[in-house]
Structures are given as C-alpha cells and as structure tokens.
Length: 192
Image 1 (cartoon, one colour):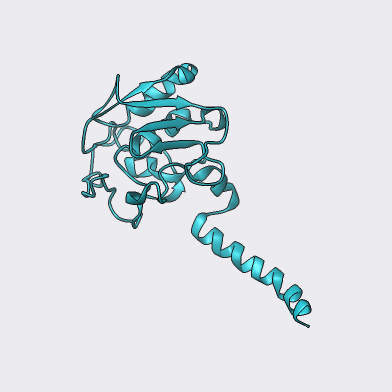
Image 2 (spheres, helix red, strand yellow):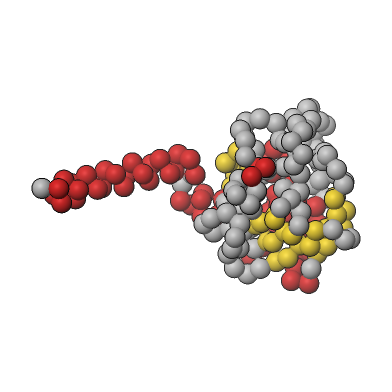
C-alpha cells in the first residue's frame, strides 16, 4: 500500500520541486549559464541581499549608481560607470586571443586600469568551484582572480564587464545582463 501511494504521488512531488526550483533559480537554460562567481555562497557571503536594492559595494555601502547619468545616443547609460574604489587587472597569456574583449569589458568601469592587480585567466571548459551549473565567469573573492570561459559566450566583452563589476558589486537580479546600464550588466544571467 505504501509503495503504491509513493509511486502514485512521486510525479507530483517531482513536479512541485521542479516548479519551486525554477521559481528561485530560473529555467534550466538560464541556470545552465547563469550562475557565476558572483552568486551568494559560503565563499561569497557578502553578496547576499535583495537584488531590488541599490548595488552595494563590498564594504556594504550603498552606491549612487542608480542616480541619473548622461545617456548615449541609443538610450543606454553612458559609460564608464562609477565604482567606489580603484582596482587594476592583468590579462594572463591564457587570454591572449581575447585581450580586446577583456579591455572593452574593463573600460565599462571607472577606476579600473590594466597593469598589476587581479589576474584574468581564460579557460575552455566549465569553471569549477564558483556557483553551480555551467559557469562561464567567476570573480573569486572580489578581485583575487577572474576566470572567463570566453568561447562559450557570444558577447565576450559583456562577460568580462560583468565579472569585473564583481570587484565591487553583487548581482542586481536574475535577469540577463546587457549593456544598457551598470545595473543591467550586473544581472546574474549570461544570455548572450
């Protein structure tokens, strides 16, 4: 009897679990590429919080990134975007073929310069130890090291801009990141 009841309700339990997971994590296709090193985890507890709030610096101070800024001709927010502190990065030899895209991504942020600082590495496979699912980018501990799986995304500069943004900021929501604003770049999902 118990076995019969279990087999009768198991599909319902699985369906409820799947719907609940998609509610909190997005669809499987989003989850597959969405999660990166910026996700709140035991390794990055400072990135927890309400994504509807202002972007927060790693020191916990609210930043004024939501304030109106000049717009470009196409209606997107003018770059580079404000940051609370200066940072620098070095492109490692593993990223030689992606240097231009990485520099374009870095140029999206004020106070970010090339030379010294955070090493930026490139890989040709899923990034381990930085979130779950298929991970295409990881900024370890707010600038200790950035790892990019550039060959798995279309907009390589956008991926770089997103990961550089984690030097200062957490995710602003679970949507797809785009170039339209600093808040959009810091959305959790890589859709391109």
